[in-house]
Length: 392
Image (cartoon, rainbow, N blue to C red; front, side, top):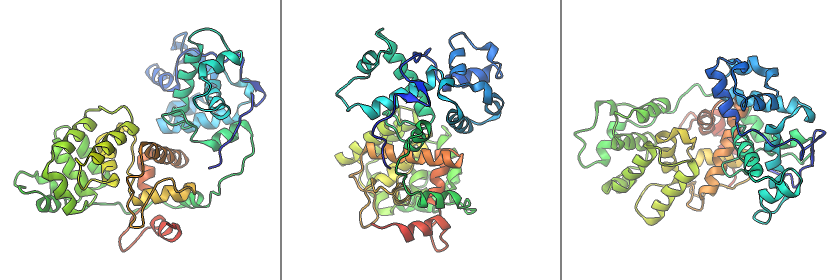
């Protein structure tokens, strides 16, 4: 996608360098507080009121109150785009200031603290930290930044500023968004049958394994802490239809992969990028034979759903390359997602899915499920489209 090289010093007529120091509060915390007080803004603390006013949320309060978290993101994003610049308070300006800084100054050559001081915003210690903290958290919440505060939604920034850019051809994305949801749901092979082939001793397998897991059923199974780490591992690998020889190789010495399963289920990774980086490093050490990226991202997806890490298999990867018209995910001629893809690529991949989720008004997991579509003899519409349009 074409990047906006520089951003203006005025946002819809508002000077971005005046009255931009916020109280340290975020949209996430504000909505939590409002929910606790049944959306009575009079019950907000003195330090909570400024962000409510800065985003002019009174105008959409009724809609926000009854909305889901995902719907609230869309409501706030659309609301911002309808406001005149001088209606915006400090908190949304903090988001724009980070975007302005990222777009106008070379990386690692000019610190944000320097930028805040030299632009005349404030000489006080802590002002830059407050702006950065508020702007980065709200920017990530709204799907404008990724976890590294890189701009991932150039179209939103373009709409916000009114800058006309060469737009990405949206033919593939438009086609995808207009497709109906598949009525058929993906199920994996019978878990019991897969396990009996892969394991040397399978007598202790639970009766619940005599099934073909649906995606949502698998997520529920993995979230149930009564199910052991070993059994959740088997459930995910069998659901994905892992090559049985690869399954045998991986489970011949299960200690390394079970250590990872424990870390995922116990919340030891702070974000999806860190989880990917750790597992990939173990794979490169040779301790995870047979477990490629398409499979270990399934583990991130199902065992640590709070990280919003999605399955980077060939079909979703090809879908994202196609939709973005940028083959940033490396896929070889045998259709394997290769080890050239690092944690930065995975973060970008997941961020693109999050953006598509916002377009569909669903969470990233449902967006990824639609991107995967259905294969087999009776392929569904999006899978057929990818096969037809994707060029290696």
